[in-house]
Image 1 (cartoon, rainbow, N blue to C red):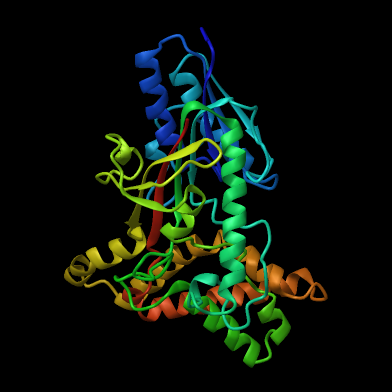
Image 2: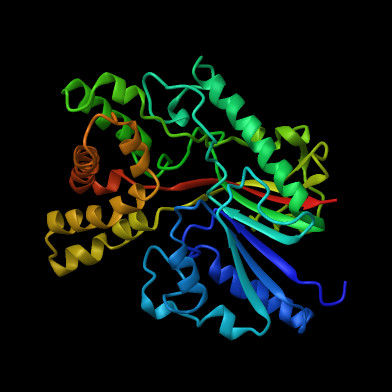
Length: 368
């Protein structure tokens, strides 16, 4: 309809630093095609999210991009000032609920958010994350089943919100055919989740935490494989024939699916790896450090201190919540701090062996 807003929704937005550069590009493209069309930037995350940073980024009060090597010099100006007739809205409703009006969204985006469950199906006995389990392990099936139920619900809710012809670009954590996943790759010896589990288990054996607290510490999410992502769509159906299948993953074609689900169709699906920028820089600067006579031990410690917080932002609450409610808050905070300190110490000793490489499935889904 004439003057109907073009709505772009970001699910699991965090502080908006991941999607905002993309939002600038999208609005610029919309403006070229439809100069007078109103644009609505819609954001979804939990009520306790850092909403202050979201709004300040959109208003240009803090840099447009967040994360590794993004300082104050990357501010491209407030998106609300750069373009006319652009507004922002936000919701604290979970993406397991309806977040926006029916048939109200033109383009959806989500990055590394939809692997989170509504709840952990069981307390695993020997690991903290389901990715550490063999797929034929008895404990793995409850996670597989929970992942399937939750993914179908996510898709059902997005199908209600997406306009016919609209697209959903989903970048979600994956477990690859080579059994690689977040923090485990061909580039390093150590597995991040493996080290988390071993350190936490050692705390239990030393009496620092109880066995019950170890068992209560479970990451309520799953790094789904391609089979899991495509299951609601009847499974893979060979290479995609869609000419624009690389729209999300920038790879040729990708996989198509056998059928639709709730009116949604897979345009293309691919695996992809994003290297850990901390590890890449550490390895790349080895020659420069040697040439300058830099104290390698000090540099390694500085690297570890810089790296560990990026593993902590999303995992800290899992460790704290696994500890007994009978402990004081100060105790829970200190034990969790001790865990990350030990991880930092391990990285400082052998920084070349640790990284948080990202393994993703890239999905482009269309409402038909």
